[in-house]
Image (tube, rainbow, N blue to C red; front, side, top):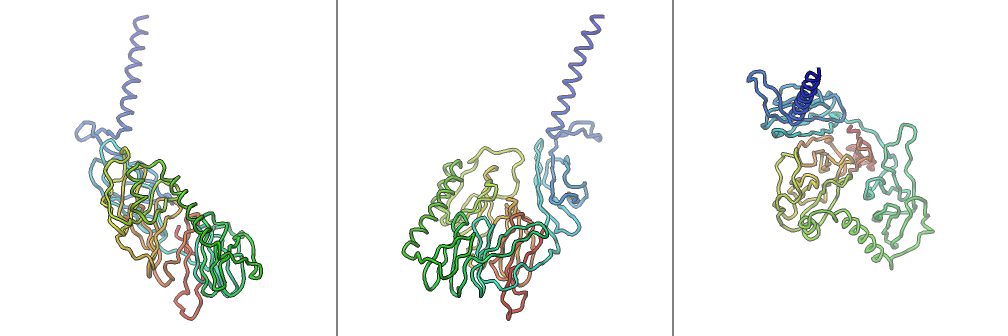
Length: 384
């Protein structure tokens, strides 16, 4: 009886060990091929979409729905994601054996809805650093629009922060967004974005303007230094000496930058991670070209070789996975690596006046709807 118990005990250990071993092999991508009666080393493709419920095609064959895992042999595939009412998502991916490749695809409407936000005319809208506020003028003064998609019935109307004739004036937000520096023919003024300051109560600070601007510049530099503190020294040096514009993604895992000088990024600045992007990267930095550096994956992608940003604009969507390129006649959304470019709006608007809502579901554009005799207004475009 004792021998039988001992035998069953060791048999249980063997069975458990075998099951654990099989589970480990399965997690690593091994699958049993009935045709060859052998274990085949495969890779795992994980597809997640927003919104969910999209169809997943591999090499034009439907293999299932999104938010699922798919076992594929190691090779390069054309992956397409489709959902009714949304623009198709497409990318060429390389699946590696025993590696999980994850796809997070944001799908955008093929026919965005259009709605007016202002009605009294808008001139020269300017956003705060985080796009939460838009400042603009009309014939009644300077206004602030909260760029947040409130629930139905709770939308906030624009608020006036100063009055008077502001023709020819320019303005800019402080780094915190709590103040605006207003420059007019009559002087320079600091305005609180949270209250109304009548023209008669504005205080001319022209003598302090340069000092204020230097302070704001220092605040921005301190923030960039804090964000780059833990990056590899070579990358820090590039960002400090050879870049004229740095914009971190909202989750601070990626850096959008335009080069002011040529340079090279050495390979493996950060230890490679399994399942990293297989898209072509460019580590030879060229002057005036715009790139995105993925901090987690140590990948550097060329986004735009054109140095013509007076009528063009490039910025992050709040999801940190997409960029918006606003140019004459169209607005394009792309993946952060520069691939999968999709035109979400084409038609008449005033470039580069395009801004994202903080929830990432809409864009705000300046347009007169093609009527040149009318003053442009701000309209929302629902892209999600």
